[in-house]
Image 1: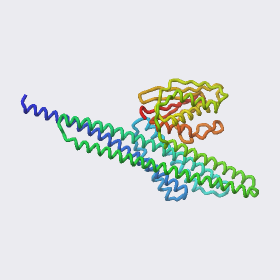
Image 2: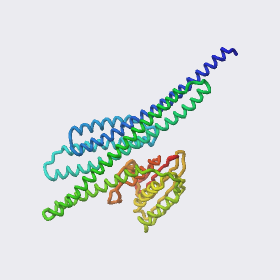
Image 3: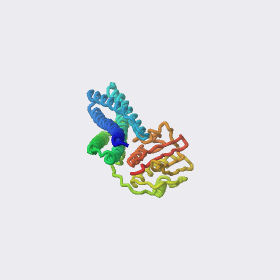
Image 4: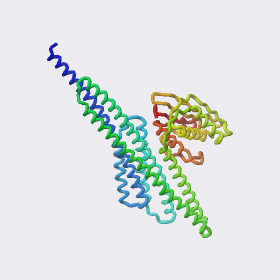
Amino acid sequence: MKITTKLQISTVFSLGIALAIGLILSLASQKVNKAIKSSSVVYEVVKGVSEMNSLLNEYLLHHKKETQTEWQIKYNSLSKLLSEIKPEDPAEKIVLGRAQKNHQEVGSIFSRLVKNYERQAHNRDEIILCLQIEDKLVKQLAVNSHSLVTDTSQLAQISYARVIKAQKKASLLVMVFILTIIVVIGADISKIKRLNEELEHRVIERTSQLKSANEELRVFSLSLSRELQTFVRQIDDLSAVFIEKYSKQIDEEGKRMLDIIQADTRKAKQFIVDLLLFSRVGREKIKPVEIDMVSLAKEVFAGLKSIIAPDRNIQFNVGVLPLARGDKAMIQQVFVNLFSNSLKFTKPKEVAVIEVGGKTGEKGNTYYIRDNGVGFDMKDADKLFGVFQRLHSKEEFKGIGVGLAIVQRIINRHGGYVWAEGKINEGAVFYFNFAEKL
């Protein structure tokens, strides 16, 4: 074979390899850029939620028309951003759907609140009705706004994880292709290194922005909670002083109304305390250790039964429970909340049956707790893990609706997710999944 022919073949071969490497690098870069672009949209959503909550707080204080208009503009902008997010896995799709639903409910409640403020009251009964409606709508806004903050923060975490994953894959490909270039064509690798450094810099920059937005949301939530606590405490204290000084001058109807005020303020205080408790679960540092799930489940259930249902006829079945790696105190709280839930909703049964089990799969360990209690309608399944969401009246079953929300937050922080299945009067099953590595 002629040297010229060999050279031509070598040149064609080298060019082919160079073109193939260039194409693969381009695809990897596009994937990273796509992840970063998606992350930018999620960051704008998180930022928009924070700004919308600030405007909402200002409107609740001053009821200005300009603030209402600004809030509506921000709401519409956030609706558009949420519609631009394209979920890439089932867990993200669930969180996005929940965020969009909470966002729509916030808009609906805000519109009703504005109409209530603009309503003209002509007598005392109408004034009282307006105030009662306002109080109910403000509470609903607080719940849905907090849920929206939680959902967008979780979307930010998912987006951040995707950027990191894409960046790692791109970095690995870059290293492999660099070695290939050195061996085959001896190309200069400085440009590829600069690309890798640029990618890392952009990821770090986006990560910093997301962390900053999350911290702003956390500070806002704490600040608003403190302000609400002070406001509610003042109402409670003033009403108590008023009753003490002027009780002889107030008729029975007036006393009844003051009793209602005091009862509602106590509920509001408990509402805020529970909200802060839920928030703290998301800030505690995880201390991962190996957990014997069988021993932990048996220990938690025995303790709860001795306190909650010492005299009830309960059949407790323990199936296969793979070892887990996580924060033992947090996972213990998961068992406490889920077992308490089963004990509560099996109370009407003459013989309660509660079962715990699990299995190891491709995406980590999945565990479940099944009972033969009152169950629930699957159309309400998306409400189960919301903060202060209840499917049963307080007269039927006690509780404030925060236990399952705490379960979801703990499992999400362990890289997993929770879901439930049930039928009315046939029981329920609650599942939670751990990530492969914590």
